Length: 111
Image: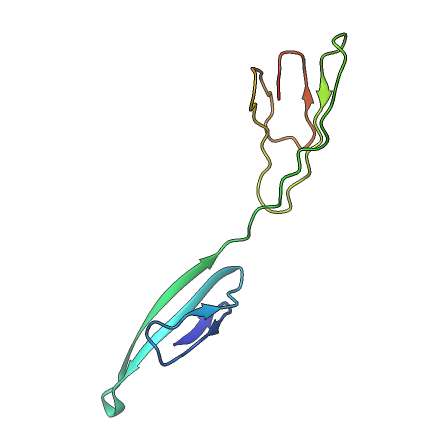
């Protein structure tokens, strides 16, 4: 087994069921070749796609607001990997743009 693109460590290059460790993020392509001396060889490739984990989500601090202005500003962290999305978990409400990092929650919304 040979690495033809990407990165990784093949545990046993002579084993058809070898494990591969230290895979790089992205596309990793490995070739499996079977040779028969002077009669040539055959090869086949396998692709292993490794995706990054999303950024851990932090919703920001809990808040208490007065009923005279029943709104608050949400303070989630920006994702380095992935897309952050606000959703209503309890109660009823409307989020006008789910994809903003900071979002103002108005009286008709709930968290």
